[in-house]
Length: 105
Image 1 (tube, rainbow, N blue to C red):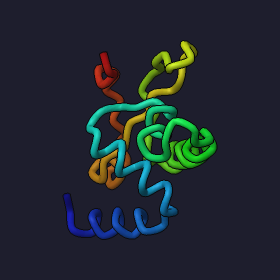
Image 2 (cartoon, rainbow, N blue to C red):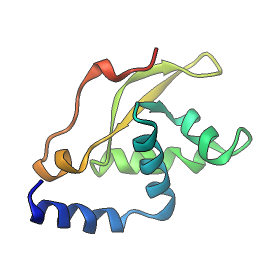
Image 3 (spheres, rainbow, N blue to C red):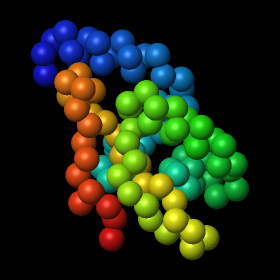
């Protein structure tokens, strides 16, 4: 990655709030797309409110930090969005990762 692109990425990352950074980092660390509920359960526990993650994921999608790569049935049996991170390289070049083969089995 070009040095200027890396600087711009780091400056933009600094603008994310603490919880958004946690969510982004968690999905990146897991290394695979995740549904909102699994992110919430992993970070905040089973009894936490979904509003702990959903608004931030929506904001990160809007701002180009995450993309929706599909849907997966959650614990309730309902379809939930499956999200994945947009890498620093993709953000710097304006490209978004659209590999639909990233879903979990």
